[in-house]
Length: 505
Image (cartoon, rainbow, N blue to C red):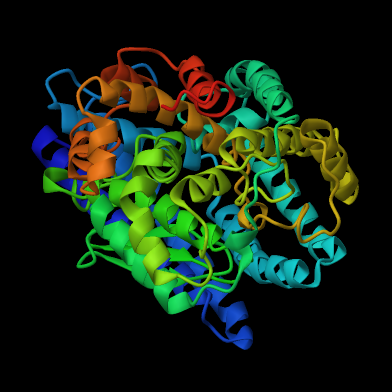
């Protein structure tokens, strides 16, 4: 195949794969609202699509095109004369083909059908707070993940090839080298805060009308730059962001939580993800596999940056508290701006990851990382997972789990077979602080936030992060943005200044 035809074939297959992935995402989106008896066929529909995607992504036509463009194990981004975007496209597709061709289409279909049907099992188990209902299917999923790791191949740790699906180039030992000192530093900060007076946040747990919560959330999303002509906000059991098309980015929240803060911050968090998705779907990247984040940790860095560094700042609430208190005068009677700010930033170790404060959040992720590695290696059996979870939470955060719903069943990710995903949440915190510090060298962040028009922040992130999509590997993109390798000291400095020394940030 000559180079011109190889390029046409590569781009055609890539576009078709992206369309199929968007169709699959649409089925997953609708699954939340589908009737119970529809789930069995829906699982088979998704399984068939996943099989077709796998076959196309690992097919002979794509391989021939990639080889014709110079891709091999030593030169994964092809010939030197290709332009940067084409080299990135070659690298991404060759990387996926090399990994996925090690999986049979039957395995892919089985894995997809199992995890698709497992979602409903998990939801029922979570509702009933009964891990025993979920245990059999989770045991099957862990077995399939062990097979997947074997199919992919690894040198030291079966966790490595699964982690690589979400954070390209990173190994479990790399994560451990970040998490081990981070764990100690975070626990030290928690200990420093233990003796301080209790912050009153009781006013956050009153009844706040949902329609007014939505009105305020929409105002914040508008300030962030969320494009409602390209995006939509829905409801789900577990908040998430999904891309159903280049101009169809959906986010969800839930208004069933006790605290008014939870749905708001899930909206800001998912809004950060959505801004990334909207930013990468532009120009020549639109409709290609390059219209994706550099990695899941990079994706998470953007949601955490918006949620915490912007949304929990003094400047944010100095701007928005007058409007918020006007919408909820009865609930916030005699609550001034400073008291509200302190409540929103209350540090209190708890059992629920999505409701965790900035300081303790990453400890929840370290727990999941430790347990996932043990499950994959066989050092921990699924039947012992509940007790292991409860013991590890007590060790890391000093709190006890009162039910399976607030413990081992609180997250949807394991029902989806997404081992290797959780570390990206805490890595995202580290990336976010490092990127935030770099941004402060060019943008007067505090003034921008206090002014309520976040477009300078959005523009900076769009120019320096979003617009590159997955052209660069995460390590290279972080260096490009911050001029540094991954460095957790920025994150610890941010937390220490805000919570321990209370200098502000």
